[in-house]
Structure formats: C-alpha cells, structure tokens
Length: 373
Image (cartoon, rainbow, N blue to C red; front, top):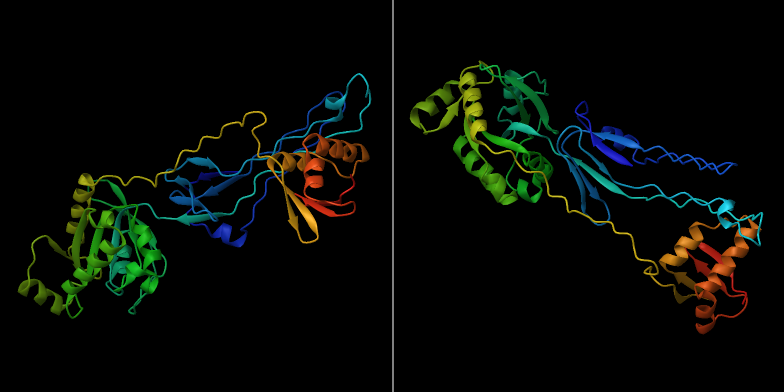
C-alpha cells in the first residue's frame, strides 16, 4: 500500500467516508511451472502536507510535504510455493502446496496540516475571513459573530510584482487555546507550516493591543519555535472612525493598519508580507526516523513458546506463525506435513514437558487442534 501526495486534493474527507482500504489479492500459479501474478499496488492519494502516523504506537510513518512524494505504509505478503517445490525422488506427484502469506495490516492516522506562505491569526471576529476574501480568490464564510470559521481556509493572493502567495485563515484563538480551549490545538497545528504569521487585531475591540499579547502568549505556549517565526502585526477595520482615532492616539512603530471592507491599507499589507517572506526560512518537515529492515539470519526467529491457557495450552513464536500461514488445512497432505513440521521444530516435546495430555486443546496463531502425541 502506497500513499502519495496529490496537489489536486485539498482534504482527507474521502478517508472519513471509506476508512478501510485493502489491496487486491494476487493470482494463483498454473501448470507448466507458471508463477502466479503478483497483486497490484494499492495507491492512495492524499493532499500535500499530510502527516501519517501509526495509530497504535504514535510513530511518524511519513510526512508527505511536497507534491509527488510517496511512502510505502504496508507491504503485501509473499507468495506461496506450488507442489513442484515438494517434488523429490520419492514423491513424484506431491499433493502439498503452500498458500501465500497474509500482507501487513495497519491502523494509520492521517492529519492534514495546511502549507501556506502567510497565516492570518487573531481573536474571533477580528475580520480574518473578510481580509482573506478581500485579498485572494477564496470565498470563506463571513459573519458578525465569533467562530464563523471552524476550518482553515486557503486562498491565493496576487501581488503587484506578479508574484503569487498562499494565505491561510486560521479559526480564531481564545485564551487557553494552547491547552485546547475552543479547539485551539486543532487550529494551532495548521500554523506549523506557515512561513510568516500575520497577527490580525480587531480595531473595534475595547483594547486591540491586549488581543496582541493574548495571541502571542497562546502561540508561545503551544510552540516556542512557532513564536520565533517571522510575523507582522495588523489592525483591521480602519474604515471605522474609532479605529482611525485609535491610530492617531496610540501609534505603534511597525504596526500596519488596514480595512478589509474598504480596501484601505491592503496593498501595504501585501507588500509587507512579500518582504517578510523574502527573509523567512522554509519550515522543515517533521523528521521521519529511518528504519532499516534487515533479513533475519537463518535460525534466528523467535523460538516457539508454550503456556497454559485455561484448560488448554497456547503456542507462540515466529517459526510457528510462519508454519501456520503456509499450511492449507483443507488439504490432508498439507495437514500431514504440518504435523511433521511441528515435531521437527520441537512443539510436541514442549507440550509433553508442559504436561499436555491427549485430547487437550492447543491454540496456535488463531488455530485450535487437539493434542495427539
């Protein structure tokens, strides 16, 4: 199973609707020493910026940051051997064959983190969605009540220099967002791959610059690295008289003033973002540990172990698991070979030493049988 980054996708909704995926099986061999056809790879498309984690261990499997990147997340099982492989000078027409081994089965967690040049961050109702709509081709939902935006929006901004930059509208942050308040953790994660932060203040608020300190506190509590990222401070709603009075009475060096409603100051804001991007580094992807898969040496498999379970016994071990997987229990010849192999790897001796009696139930890798010495 291969997961790859497709730039034409923008969400993971397809995996919410159909969470389980399975590759097709291969085809059996045929006469004339013809090998069976291998099963085709199952290729799953995800948007760039998708982080893949093992749901059980939490280990990062891959971080597909750029379009076209791919990762093998589960491998298919190896094919079995046909009866020709069991032919010898005594058995000229063996009736024994091995089925193929089962492929890997994994539970994965997919998380999409938006990749944007600039991210609009601010308190609810600061006008982020209106600003994104005014600057780009995006059409986010706009309303005069908090938390109008519940999911990040992404837009493309055309600059006066013929450049294009992507801008994300991240839902509003409230005090305690870094601890999860108001879905803050869900929102803050989308800023991790944003090169420049635009801290947008609501000019019509009672104290806009108190919002600035609150935003900075939440970002720093979530990630010191994110807090150190290049950022701009902009005050929105300059079309209101009270905001114009605020600009005159409380001027602040470096603070940009704009209005998403009238368009005043937007050109200066875009130019400032372009200048900040020219100095901003590109965030590194999440480091993925390199895993070396080495072939085990012959005889190095985990030995078979026996333990008492209720009124019977349980057998575990890699060698036993492999033997169960390659045995066709519907074939008398394969079943006889299975019993011979159990003796060869010492299972009968282990059961005898553990006190097993004829007729006791023995479970081995999902199979159950009676102990018959």
